[in-house]
Amino acid sequence: MKHIKKNSIDSTQQYLYDNFDELTSLDHDVLISTNQQTKGVGRRGNKWIDQSNALAFSFTLKAHSKQTLTPLELGALLSLYIENKFNKRIFLKWPNDILTGKGEKVGGILCQLKGSTVIAGIGLNLGHSNNVIEICNDRYSVSTVLDSKISSDLQHELPQEIVQFIISNRLDEQTVIKEWKKRCLHIDKPVTIINDSDEVSGIFKGIGQWGQAVIEIDKESHEFYSGSLRFSI
Image 1: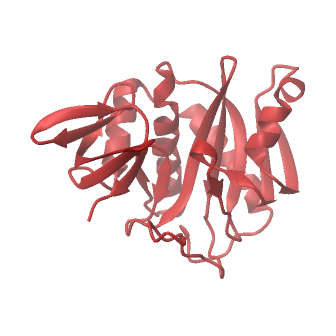
Image 2: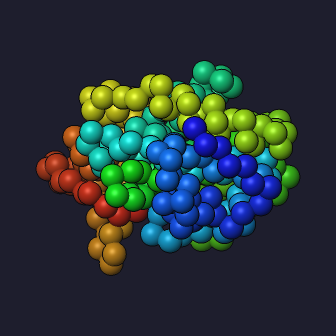
C-alpha cells in the first residue's frame, strides 16, 4: 500500500479524489493520512470539524459485493478495531455516523465511487481534546473516543493499522447487517428521517440487504435508501 503522510491538508478525501489517476497509476492501494485536516467533508458536502488528536484519512478500497453496504461494513469493522485495540465501544448511526454510547458524535465515514474503486474517508476524534465543541444547532455534541492524548506519529500509524484490519477482515452481506445492527445506537427507538424537504418519523427496526433503513410507521415497515437520521425525542 502506498501511504502518503501529510502534516496538514485541506481534505484527505478531496486530495485522493483529485489525484486519483496519478496516485493509483501503478495499481497500488493508496492511503492518505494527516495530522491536521482544515476542510474535512462529510455527506452532502457538510463540513467535518476535526478536534486535536483526531484521525483523518482516506484510502482506496474494493467495494463490497453489494456496493451500498460498503460504508456500513466500514463502520462495523472500525468499531471492531477500536474494541480490540483500545477496549472501547463506539456505536453507529445510520447511515455513516460514529457515536459514543451517550449519542455524542466522534466521527463519520464517507464513501465515493471512482470507476470501480471506492474512495473511503474516515474522520475520528480518537484522542482527548481540549477544544471539544458543541454543534450550534443542538442536534448533537462532539466528543472523543479516548480520555488520553495520542502522538502525531500515531495519527499516521493508526490509520495504516485500521486500513490493514479492514482489508484483512472483509464481511459478507449477512455479517455486515448483523455486526452493524449490534452496534446501532437507535435500534427499536423513535427516529426521524429527513430527505430533502420530506420528514418522516417512526421506529428504527434495522437495515435491509442493500443497507437501507427499515422504519416502522403505524405498524407498517417502510424502507429509506437515503436521507439524514435524527433521534426523536
